Image 1 (cartoon, rainbow over the protein chains, first blue to last red):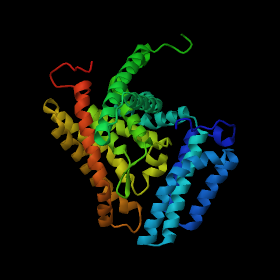
Image 2 (image 1 turned 90 degrees about the vertical axis):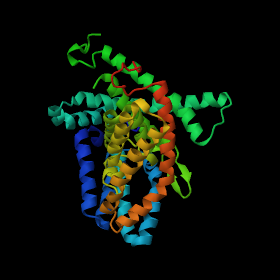
Image 3 (image 1 turned 30 degrees about the horizontal axis):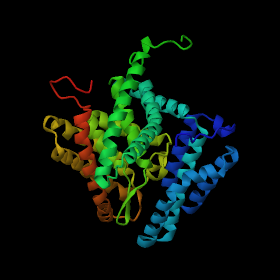
Length: 213
Length: 187
């Protein structure tokens, strides 16, 4: 899930992360401001040319990102066919398809670290409110790191319970898995924060300088 | 905000992301995603401020393009879609869940947990999410948006029950919200 970055060398990969995010935002504004067939088809074609051509991404990688959205798209088209007409539905569909593909292209061509740096840059004006941008970056980095850890812990707890013959179902099954999982990961977060503090995360002045270890 | 608070915020943002990876439970014709369970748990376990921040961080992670929303979608596109209002409602919902949880913390039990999760996790989420649908999906009336949301009610009620049962037990095992006037047992 996190390993969506596809490491090849291309102009799209080398482009600044902020530029790519700005382009993504601009595309979404355009698609909503001008909901017509030519714009929708043009956007999707443009995104595909950028992704498959310029960024040299394998088609399979983009397909994996788009596939989970397809059921939603089918439902939406059915809805529009019922309440208005298929043409309106088609434009909405094209818009969603273009945006999902474009987001997948940005994600596959940009390292997480670069994206986090953009978020830190965007948060810089919040400094006046007492927000420390580098801590925002830290939280986002921690979140991305926590996702596979939590998924792995959950699987381990479920296995352990199955091994002891646990066969709870419904609400009880949710509670018996979620409570130990939450306690485990809360302890993990506590240990992690102590480790970070020991390395000076709470006070940048105390942080060991790079190369000093 | 201590580093531990930041780690807790990141943790519940990540839990919400993991809940999106679970296959939806199907109740009747509508697939229910588990993700609003994250909203309820964040408020119930972390309280108002950290719970709301956890949801804001989750939305930031979605915005930077991680496909952590249910069905693997993500990116900036979801913030302008017809169901975007439901996303915007999550920080507010977690905040309200947390407010009620903190206000009733000393006598917190399953009943109070249910009140907190139903008000913050369902009422607030619907109140913000429903009016948003007609803004983005041309031709869908507010009434249709309102009636349509009822399809999600059984699933959301179930999630409120699960979140409440879990919250009561986690409070006993590893309380994170500090009891006023007493040293926290969460260390």
